[in-house]
Image 1 (cartoon, rainbow, N blue to C red):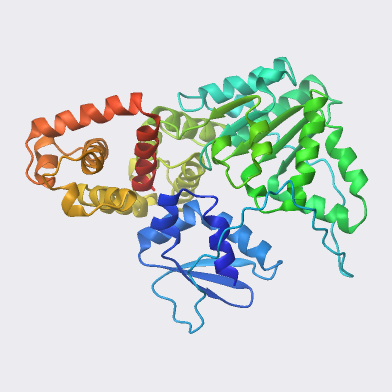
Image 2: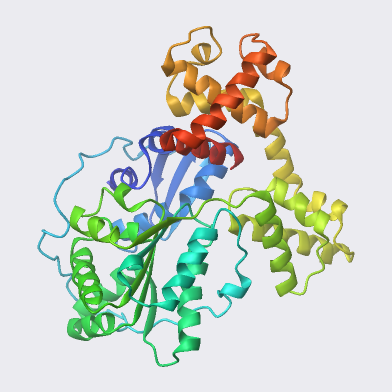
Length: 456
């Protein structure tokens, strides 16, 4: 069934904790051209729409062969009688690159177009990219690519991190800069999904040799969201050969993904290994200073008069990613124009009242405790209880550190919420969290995941 197949694929794209916490509880109801997903709360709905709606929509359309064009997320229980099963089907372990290619048959109403070099977005250049501590290394790596295209130490260049942080901007900035330096350079930008679509179209139209020639004669190949090639056996095989052909000719490849290469366990190990040959650089959510500068730069490029104190206020409230920052700015501009007034803090507060209400409701010590317990799968009574075993002590310290950072509550207030502990215990926990984040990458990853969940 459709949702069962979606679940099987989704579990390969998200961590076990996130899959168990957010995806598995969903109920689904299938209609002629729509998949309806039912969630238990508005907070849940917001999280699914922000982080998973796009990938679920793509998967539903693919699995249904184009029949399902819309995915709706609704609060409540499914009223339909034929709710799709929530159980996952057993995962297969067939190697993508070892499987024989499955060639779709051409249909009489096939309207697919042959492969073409897609236009880069000229607005995605280095001048308009705001750099900060979260993306400085990635930006430097992209500039380095231009100095020596195809050099082994950064080919392929693999940019990874959550959606909406500027990975696409950076990769296209390289393409735009190269075309300024070498107008005759052959540059192609594509998403993993468009690679699949073009490959299938070429097979249907019997133009596969033309497709191969176009891809393997490039000077620079830019492929977005490479993790979405999972499950596309024939396309993966062709990408594998194209990837190797370009590397053999020292042609530059830049890829993006939502995860570090070795975490792409749903792809063939040989391909994942090749992703690690060059340079892999992570892009993290921007800090508040970078978020503020992004807003000011965006406003300047759009000729919008945005006072710095207003940009700072927006940056304090919207922390998830750059796309949400831009969306918040658009709401502020629309409100100011509707009122016929300049942008000030009153206009910003009015525009973002929903965001402020959600943030005030969600960022509390009680909510932090709930999310931490769900993430680590431990009872609330153990998180706030007296047991000092590591399985409870580490999550407890992490929850205290998050509470101190996100709520601004005092040490005694936080201590009272954790079983009446004194302020010195909370201080020690916050210090321990900071040292563990610096020393233990897995602890730091968990902390950042929880931070994003609570801020979403």
